[in-house]
Image 1 (cartoon, helix red, strand yellow):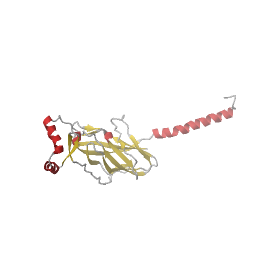
Image 2 (cartoon, rainbow, N blue to C red; image 1 turned 180 degrees about the horizontal axis):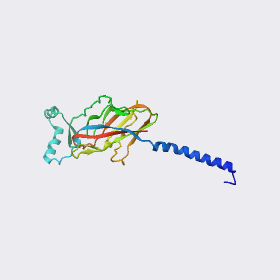
Image 3 (cartoon, rainbow, N blue to C red; image 1 turned 135 degrees about the vertical axis):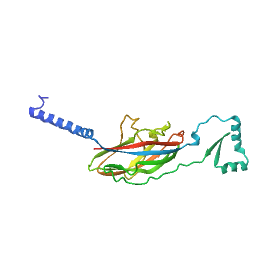
Image 4 (cartoon, helix red, strand yellow; image 1 turned 120 degrees about the horizontal axis):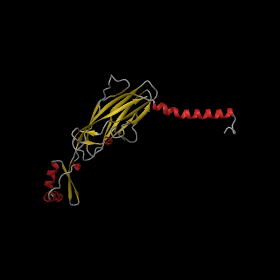
Length: 242
């Protein structure tokens, strides 16, 4: 290379290469030296209603099966008696399936800002949601999360601390609850929560922003149909870096 370029020209080329490499590394270094500034938690409590179709029991005796099958051609008076008890029968060939009508109860989150928080805060410390196993249920703006920083560039990460459990051995995956976190317009789809305890001890990135921004957090609960009745909980953790 010394034969192709003079000493001064070679020096300028080397300086240019060094500057280009430095420009590439600066964003990486800046991101690496971000430190945690604040962290908060919002407890998500889910009251699970069991789904009759998800309850697995012992096989019914042959006589009981015969009785249920005969309901397909039962007299009108008997059919009305079952309707009066809110039992609905659907004939599938020679089989009849009984299901009790149930519906999840929606709980609206109330807004009560925390006056003690200034940098990262939520309007709720805990939210209570009622949902039926096996039936996706959505809750609009179950809570809000606000970053109020004095810097123009910060990084907000989030995730569940652990899977949902009821303290008595019952549990379901944290990813069965999805969040749609946005500033003004909901995203096209919700994203299952990452779980810190399951995903290598890391939080998922929620957003990169600056100064003050408030996120509305929609939640969608989609528990397995076999989830037993009970109260399940986990903590949604939000961590601010800059």
